[in-house]
Amino acid sequence: MRKIILLLTLILLVSGCSEVQLSPRYQQVLEMSAINVRAMLIDCRAGNQESCEKGLELSANLLDYIVDASYGRASDANDR
Image (tube, one colour):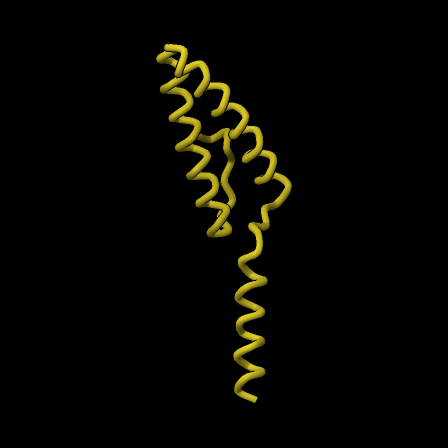
């Protein structure tokens, strides 16, 4: 019986870590932010200081948004 409980516990732990589940809203914000930050990084490397600052700001906002999602808190990406 003990082995079965251990096996079931391991299966639950492994299945719970297989992938991150995001709502469609959070998934869309994540994808668009990734695209925008990547474009700003290219501009930043080309010497555009404004893109460097804006890209860093957008990255920080995205991380805050993901943290909110991980705790189940609703947030609006436009608020930041």
